[in-house]
Length: 478
Image (cartoon, rainbow, N blue to C red; front, side, top):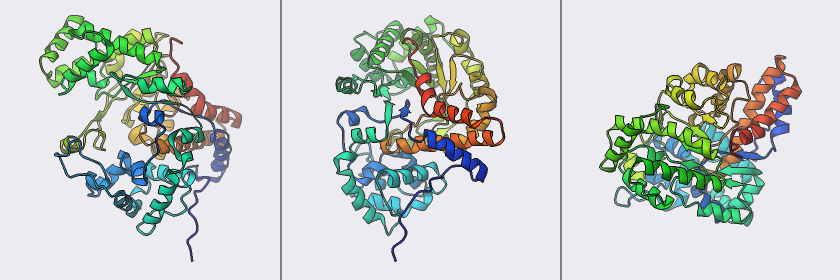
């Protein structure tokens, strides 16, 4: 007898308590089909410009998804077994070329994802988007692979067609400071300029202890047309690039530092460090001081070009030097560290925290600072918004804890709305759906406890899902 087809419960991720579940269902029904505003992510703009197909199932689901890969690596699989190629063919074993084998490994290990947000996203993608009716397993791997292979070859499953099907109103890519922005220009010429916008990411330029820093400075100079021979030239080149990004539709800059330190340097000291860095990598402490100074300078620059400043510190990148050397960055070995915000951000907020032309959105994966530091900060400074649970916290538990910890102090309207922070395009609707369900559940609890009326809860859910991201990321020079 054939097994029953794989179906998803319509009440998944809603509260288990019956009264709250009924209220949450009513709230979620209102927001479920609202347009998606995806203001922080890592989809390559070229794939949208070229309207690429997704290739095969391993290329879509496994190889590019460090959430999925890291779980398999934790169980002893090697990156190359999962189709991940070394950055230098001489550095490690070649990637598995038979993607059906990669897919089988994933399906055989489906149980590893129990209880994780990855499981929720994958279920949504496979069932809701691609119509798969069998649960992944060793027995079903080949059947699912063949079905997906046929589906992915159909024109309605190319990225632009799915963009429309997902009801994405705006998607922001993340782009290096020296990007030529040509793909964005081509999309704009086709009428997509308000749908796909760039985000300015200058991190590589702010840490002069990086081995490639000198090369990146030369690239910045060439792209900006500014001779970056000294610190003044460096600042001018950054300003030029920021204005170029703003002209291309950018709403924000994005900064992923280890620390939240924003202590400015005296101009001569900053100039001296920059000059020293041109002659060789700085010591880590000096590089950290320069990076902190550049966060302060970023806030100053945002007053002129209107870009919203996103800051998400607190991750030690590339924890495994071997994995970084062989396979490059973003391979799942980024590990959170504790972060202090109150004193670190005081120099920047002393200068710009009350400035109407400045906005900063703060993210963290250190939950200990939500109620102690970030919610009080967002709850008083008009320039500060608190970003959504991000990266390791974009899970049902992480989202629930976020609302519990920050709402008392910051309310709902000092938060930014959800960001999906994904490289996996097909997961975008799944991630936003989970966020909307968790917010519906939290609001339902307030209604059940007679702390909100149902009409207020529905209005708040609409704002969280749709209106707040548009407002939080609105350019302040517009």
